Figure (cartoon, helix red, strand yellow):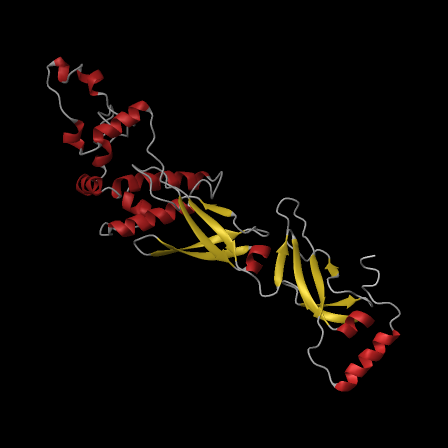
Length: 315
């Protein structure tokens, strides 16, 4: 197996280029992203194995020097010869040559002297069945538009990773609540010894809309109407979140604060898969100034109204 080909890089690639290639391939082939995909699972394993070598300067130097023989140096004698297969598992020199070294002669050696720093610790970890520690999770925040959180889609996240800015496409499910967290598998800190990287936890903040507000799964729109429209009734144009403008009827004698309902034009409930409604909260807005003849007409109107609205309110 050519580790450089596995990662899709050249032998002259820098450590940063190798790390970026590893992170991309790990993300694209991660089992959480492609569950049940055997090819992706195998590629993911090969990528981890390749980066375990090329991501370590000392191991990379040995690999560049010995090539494929580097893989066999830590696996012990092969009954079929060096070119005839690959025997996995750690080598127990005590079982091969007797306790204390070769044939009990008292001659002993340190695996680190042969295979480099960490070799004996790695072998011990393999013998005890301990797996290398997974990389740590990273937390970050992202603000998304109101419409995107309501209807769903993808949004680009610019993540500063020290070596530069990496841009990731984050999938936003429809009906996402403010403060929700999205997990991006394999986008966290790098693991040790070829272990899987951690995850990236993105907390979503929803930007306010110019005129829509959210109330549970309902959308609230405040619509101003005139005194005449409230008294006599009217047809008014109101916006919807993504279907343009629609016409609604204001019943005669409507009071400020009354709500009209547009069924099914609200936010999708992620559990029931049913959309809420759009509620139009009517607000009567009085003119700040009137000509004299309009004032006289309103005074005449007041005389014609049989009952004042507050007369029975607190009785």
